[in-house]
View (tube, rainbow, N blue to C red):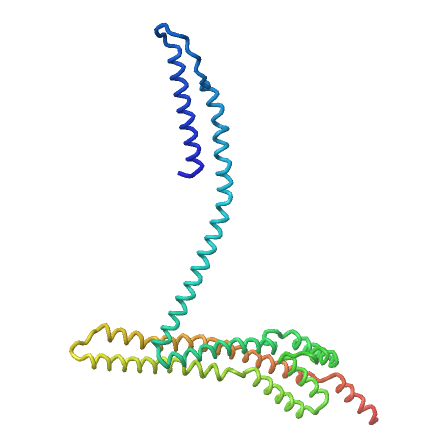
Length: 313
């Protein structure tokens, strides 16, 4: 029962008790008795007046109770915040203890795998940022420049990609400059050189991811083998008092390194496949843009070929 209901119930009981007493006194005053000295009339409030006063008394008791209930949510909110902070702290503490136990049980192999996991995460983040800077997912400027070149506007095509930092734009700009300034054979060689250099930069870091994806499971397997050796040695030393739980504990601790190695190798393999697909897409776009540039003859070269026969005549 709440404080508010308790106050209302108490007031009701008091009012009922007073009404009962008033009715009893009134009945005794009207009952005929032996002649005696006249007694003073009892001053008792009528029951109707008591019923009228009761709501006022109840309101008086309820007023401070409502104020206390208004302050209750604030206290409850503070208490919930404290509980949330305590739960978060305990969860962090438990996670830290579990990680420490995992590293202790895994042995030296698990430390090497943990270092590889940090390197893998750093490589993935760095490679993603590097590809963003190279414009791996933006090809609009290069396509516009090639379209302008095919339309015969060499200067506009060069101006579109001259100040761009993307890989496609750099190769297209180099191809246009070589096409305008060098003979066709030399221009092809220069374009090939620039394209290979840019694509080699785009492929930086992929060998490291490939190496991590290969050696992480092997490190996990090595840790498992070492743990199994230690478990069987402990079983042999126990002799006839061998405890099966001792062997089981050693086996599951040894298998931790295998699971950790796979947990590192799988993301590394996925990231490697994705980055290779992105670099292959860049290579295809660069080859297509260079081919289109060399298939179209600049307009100024065609004008020179027309002017030269006229001058000879």
